[in-house]
Image (tube, rainbow, N blue to C red; front, side):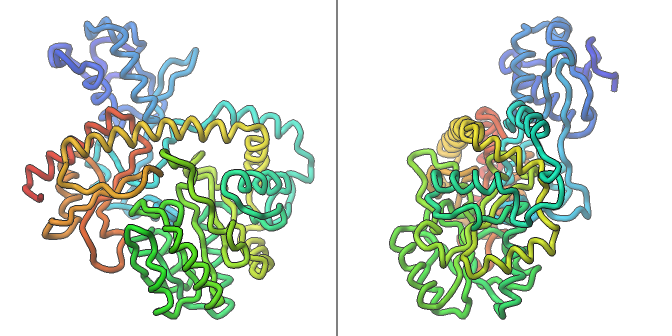
Length: 479
C-alpha cells in the first residue's frame, strides 16, 4: 500500500466507485476496514482533508465528517500540527489470556470471530474515545508538582488517604453509602475485589457462593479460580429470586442490584428487603457489584444496598465504565468484620495500588471534573442506546428487548426460537457484526437471546448494526 499522505493512491479509493449518496459512510467504512485489517497501522497519517477531497472530487465536509466518525469510535486522533493519525485497535490473539473477570467484562471469543467482525457489539466496553485526556493530564501535572516523597513511596495498603477521603464523599452523594475513609479499600477493579473476598471467605471456611443466573460469566470464573464454587440462583423480571437462597447452602451471594447483567433489570424493593432479611437470618454476606449504577437515563438510580445494611454488604465499584478499564482503579467497602482480613490480603497481593493514578482521581473528584465527565458520557450513551433501540424495533420486532433504560448494553431475547442462541450469534457474524449469545452467561438452560454493547459506537453505526442483525436472522430464517 502506498504510504498515506495524499494522492489518488490512498487505499486505492476510486471516485467512480463512490455511491451517489452516503459518501461519508462509504469513506469512513473504507478507512475503518483498512485499520481493522492492518493496512493502516497505528501512527499512520491520514491525508489532509482538502487534498483528499480534491483527489476524490467530493466536498471537504465529507472528509471532515468521515474523520470525525472515526475519531468518535476511537480509531483516529486529530491534533493541531500533526494532522489526523490512526490510533489502531486492540486485537485478541489466538491463545491470549481472557480479560479480567467481573460484571460484563468482555469474554475472549474465538479469534476468528473477532477477525471477521466489522462492528463489535461485545458488552462491557465503554466509549474509550471519550476518556477525559485533557482533564487527566492537567490533574496529573498538578499532582506531580505537589506530591511529596511519602506520596510516591510504599503507602497504606488501603490506598491513598486523599482518594479514600474523596471517595467517601463521592459515594455518599451518588450512592448513599455511609462509609468513612477508613472503611474503604482501594483496589485495581471489581475483579481484584472479588479475588480478595474469595480468598478471605475461603480462609473462613466458605466453599460456595450464590450467583445470578444469568449473570456475569467473568465474575463466576474469577470466584471459581479463587476456590469458591458458584451456585446459580435464577433471575426474573424483578431481579434475583431471593427465595431460592434459603433452599441452598451458600452463605454469601454476589449480585448486581442497580442494573443486573445481562438482563438489565433492577432488584425490586421487596426483593431488596427479603435479601437483607435472608442475610440477617443466615448470618450471610451480600457482595454488591454496583455495575452500571452511573448510567440510568430515565430517573435517578436506586441507592446502593450497602446504604441500608453496611454490616451485611461488601460493596464494590470501579472506574472501568466511567473512565476506562485500563486505569485499574476501584474500591471495596466491606463490613467491619471482614475489613482487617481484606487489608492484609491486599497487602500480600501487591503492597497497595499505584499511587499516581489514585492522586489524580482524588483531584478529579474534588474539582468536579469526574462528575462533569460522567454527565457528558451519560448524555452520549443515552443517544446511542436510543439509536440501537429504534433500529431493533424497526428491523427486528420479533425480538424482545429487556431491562430498564440504563447501562451500556441491551438484552434481546427470542422466546419462540427453537435451537441454540449460538446459532443466532454465528448468523449475525456472517453480516460482520459480533454479538454475545445469552447462553454464554448462563449456568442453566433458558430463553435464547443475544447481548449487545452499544457504548463504543456512534448512533448511525448502531442503526446499521441493527439492520445487519435483522438481515442475518431473516435471511437464515431463524425467527
